[in-house]
Image: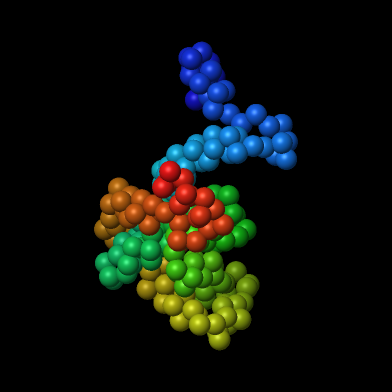
Length: 210
Ligand SMILES: [Fe+2]
Ligand SMILES: [Fe+2]
């Protein structure tokens, strides 16, 4: 919201809630109480920001038979209908969310977003799905189809190959009846409700208890 659309009182209230330091090394416990309380409110809205960003893929075909949002919904729907758990389904939904900002490394963007909320295996699948997905098309672009072989001995090789085979490479069918983004929203909210691991997890826990 721009400053012009806010009342004087709201702006004054915001100013009161701001830390006083000009350099972090001048910071006080009071400063960080103000920042901490607002951080928690901001963190709670993460699922909304993620869902908004996912919607940016709507109508973006890039030459594919379905747009990137439909591909995401179809990947998640196929995983869901195959009985995968919520962490897995949310990963499937978000696996290409980095297409907009991570044009040259999109799997890492999604992997970073979901990392605090999912198992190490699901994070690994997300992070490396690009190399495994290449098995289905890199050779058409003069690249090495078998680039995934560098991971052959990794404990999650088979799980990542399975994700691509069953859900990701299979999710370009314009006639498939995918679930809507609204269908997956509650799952995204549940999975992202609190971090399982993060260097800020302890602070989040303390703020929630306060
Ligand atoms: Fe991808
Ligand atoms: Fe994909």
